[in-house]
Image (tube, rainbow, N blue to C red; front, side, top):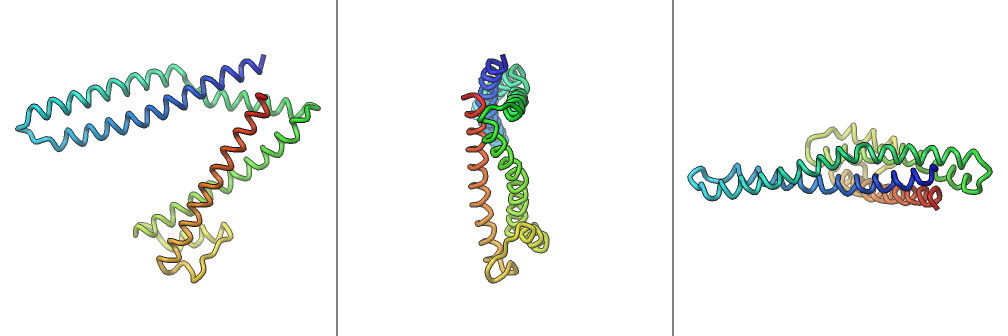
Length: 190
């Protein structure tokens, strides 16, 4: 029974993900259409009509996508909950998949701590590079990660170097997390 529920929930979660991506894209088009409408000269009624029509069409598509998202509901959360239940069941049983699932869970828990810390440090570094952040805060975040830049962080080149390292590592960790989640699903649904 739980296998069928998992498969159904997985389909709904994938539908939600697709709709969410579409929502993001259409929302960007709405923002762009609004900006274009804002810059049209008042005397150019034809351009205003075209821009308003375009904005209206995008708004209609956005409303339809939002209705579809509401219909699918919290699909991702439900799917994750069902996966967690199945994972607990398998880990508690004599099923040989349990050991692998426990290891995947341990690695994901570590990533859930490390990745946000690196992302916060990266964000603090970007703020420093844009002149909107304090170097001291960035240094504190970087030191908490056990990182240091050759030549120190007091010069912008050092900050830029560490931000690039953080960016690369965040990308790697994100890919690792995605791979582990996919393997977890594969083990549970396999």
